[in-house]
Image 1 (cartoon, rainbow over the protein chains, first blue to last red):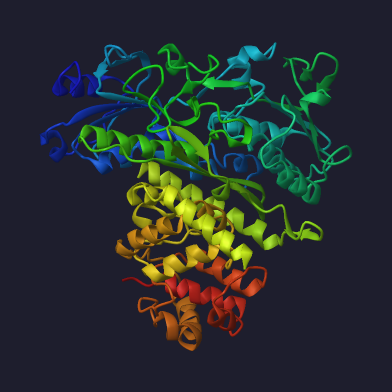
Image 2 (image 1 turned 180 degrees about the horizontal axis):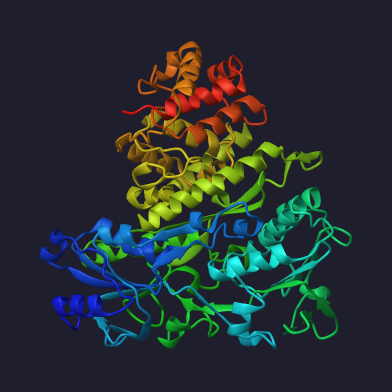
Length: 448
Length: 189
């Protein structure tokens, strides 16, 4: 156990309101502990790391510290807005991990001491570690838009970029919007979690309007960037399904054309770019992102003061030894633009497995395995229209290498360059099914 | 001829550079979509653990070399060397085949059995558990996945190299094919 003995630790937690330790199997408590690993954050990255560590070596003591008792998947959460999906279908609990002998602690981490190798929680408990896996996700920089605060996001201008209550608030606002209303999506400067997310959201909102008597409504995307993920696929779908551009249901304004919002006014319900005002009935402001606060406080955000740089071979922080950062908080070196590590659930899951394998090898004195990182990300733009992107990264000579052959978006056209033809609709339709199958499997891969 | 040579040369090169990756690490990249040990938890994704080695090897290479179309797999496998594909096929073939038995109505089972007896038994066995050398297990495979796969054969929009399946799909109506998929999905070990 850590700095307090196990019995006292269990007693403390059982006594503490809101905290719970899920069943600890007898076999686990009797076995010799090879090493202690603490995992901070129970999203796709943290949960998967904890699960695989226990799966690959039950001799490792794994403690997962996570605030919430139930996780809600951000991927496919835009479908909740259109009503295609119930939010419950996105959720997973931590019982599966507890059954595997992961010690699940529901609490807030207040301090990480990477030198003393200790983690402290709000309730005053501390956990010593041999290795620390940080999967804190992202924090939102509310200050980037004048007029925006965390409180305004929670009550008036939801970002809904962490799935949960804000997703449902945004859905209510959409439902209350009159026909002919304007739904504004404010997109921050990248990198942000789920690069295709804002554009997928525009489509889901449009689908809702089309089927719920709001056909005259408009969706305006005010973007702080000049292009976006899977752009040709989105533009094709928007055009075919909802009308795109001026006069269409969906309009996208690039940063270069005035899309960069600087200020919001929740009272007047307007966004300002310094020249023009955009009035909306619903304003969905997604603030810029940076690595979760606990990672920044621990001195791990050594890349542009916002993100945590890690080593290609095993995701170890370049700032502190024995600390591994995975998921949306990390950055894979200087890989530029479309070739950078995408901030996605699948990538977090892939990184988690690499950390688990590498730690298990290290703890058992075995050679470090050669990693391979994969990503799949589905976008659903209508109940029968979806598409995806896949990525493959290898590590060669200590550097990340983007493997172009194993990467890429769904086909944009069929036929030849000279005589292109549209991709058959059956291809687009099947991706919607695959998106759901993927979600079920990735939730199970991390949480069961 | 020149093009074929180039493709082979590239395949050899990438094979040499990539063969170091441990198969366990590689196989874990499949779990996100196909489940741990290749037992899928999502209805549209097939379970792959325990399928025949030659079948797995063949379909992955067909996707890689554009002889068969898939939605995502044909993109992903292009990043894997032939050696890695062989290793993955060996790995998943060694896992136990774990049917995910799905419930259906007695009427649907009767309807499915009628189609299965007429068209599928020859290669897949009556319960889908006695497959031919180039036919996968179907007992307890996800019915939704099988329906999607059958749609691929029916639509004519996909490159599907298995001639016998292409012929078979047109001997059944879409409703019969769906019933057959549900019948196989309801079978156990």
